[in-house]
Image (tube, rainbow over all chains, first blue to last red; front, side, top):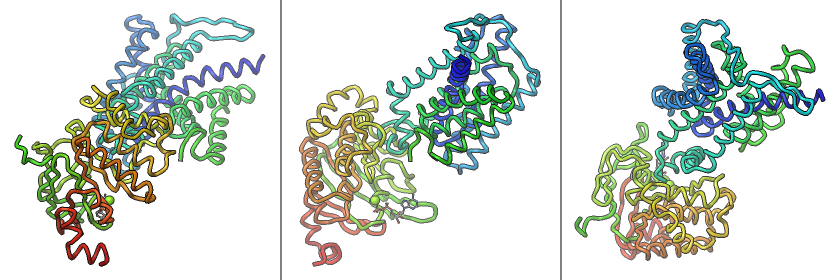
Length: 285
Length: 240
Ligand SMILES: Nc1ncnc2c1ncn2[C@@H]1O[C@H](COP(=O)(O)OP(=O)(O)O)[C@@H](O)[C@H]1O
Ligand SMILES: [Mg+2]
């Protein structure tokens, strides 16, 4: 039973990693840019939900979709103002751009909201329950379910809509896509918007149980980078799978040794995968 | 528009990569319904002419107009809706998308999307193998099949001019014959074709007219017969 509990807990947290990783992989896949500031968009959404809750009494479950819409436009704006300038630049310049954005967003959060941990102690989803001999924490289950639904919606968007097809075309060959009449610049903006909206949903759902600090986003994004690498850079399904694996490995590792060591197992797994399959489980090339 | 106005008119085109000039005052025209070939050895600048026409590389000087409209300032993604389709060198299909998805993307622009299902029926009647292979990933097709899908993808936009960069590159003689037949078939349906090729005889076998490019300059132009009988062509390209 204890193995079952660890597995289920790992999968639930893994769904959040999966969602974060899918957004990262989307941007990398479409434009070959690693968005180091991905977690910071999540952090912004957490603060957004926290302040709506404390100032207006709005439940995070309601403010999460608002955060997603807002963060869509933030993502498009970041693309237009910053990323567009480094599209043709060297990879180093691109890394500095998104890593600089991470530093800027974290520092701004420290400045505006201090480093105190904020929590939302009571929300609609608070509470625990037991099912088939397993224990469940309400906020975690709802966050996992919400992440799964968002991941499914993301998959549907990419694989079942016209815009998603354009996105895939640009990802495979941007020049050829332009010749099909696809405005790659617009598609890049949409990719940023969708990626940021997805990670904002993760942040909003996490705000019901996870302590909010300027570093909260980074704590989730770092393992998500590993998930992307494990799944294969640019593969959306791979990122999802990688997220689940990370969740289970981290939870099991932490449980059977000490929570202090949980990240160790994640990075050990990462090294293993890199040696065994450098392009990840579902990666190409 | 007067009947004399060509479909595509390129005038005094110059292209510079960094500080290396590749095209020097290139002018050429394609009239409605024509098949025209652009001949020249490797590195002459054939691809550059096409890529500059569709704004994939910047034009340093010169003027390109299509159906009488100056293309200055029109981005690549705005051209296909105007009836100008371009099949890039080495086909450049979307390799992990299916044949059908590649075709749908060919008719992606709003003008073409309105009658995309009819276009699909049309290209699949011109190239029946597209139906059997519709769910196959484009990257797993043979070179000849990829070339056919690339041409079909271009046709999905219902273009008045289809530019094909090196349609016969790396193909077996049998497949080359098939592609030649396809080009003639689509031309009979009223689509003008401009294509690049290094083999003079092969290219002129289906072209009404041709241009010979060398080191970024048009060396000569003329009808297929004129070109085949030209002294330079006979000496340098046919070894006679
Ligand atoms: N992106 C580029 N940057 C710099 N030089 C280029 C580029 N593309 C082509 N060239 C050069 O321009 C010349 C013409 O190339 P290209 O148009 O591809 O010739 P062709 O298609 O006739 O073989 C060649 O010398 C080639 O090396
Ligand atoms: Mg070429």
